[in-house]
Length: 87
Figure 1 (cartoon, rainbow, N blue to C red):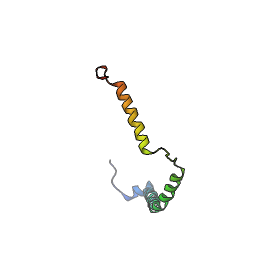
Figure 2 (tube, one colour; figure 1 turned 90 degrees about the vertical axis):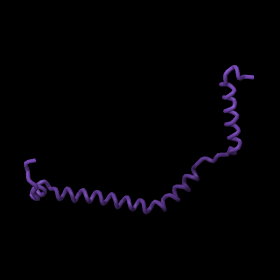
Figure 3 (cartoon, one colour; figure 1 turned 180 degrees about the vertical axis):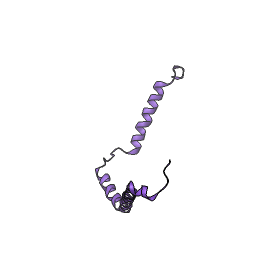
Figure 4 (cartoon, rainbow, N blue to C red; figure 1 turned 120 degrees about the vertical axis):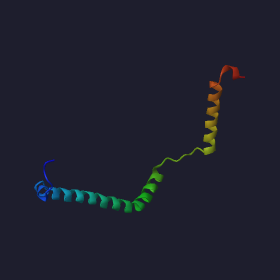
């Protein structure tokens, strides 16, 4: 830490070029991000229709599915309860 601050040190180590390159990279990334966010409302509806068309359709009514789940749960309950509670 014996060196004093001098603008010549920044110039000797290409500090200005490095700083400008860093700023260019950051601002380019920010511009690309803002473009993506601006296009997002147009992209989402297209992907939703594509997903809806390719998604498998559930042919089982929900009430039938719930009945099967309830029956399985009751069967497991009867199988796992202690012997003194069995009738």
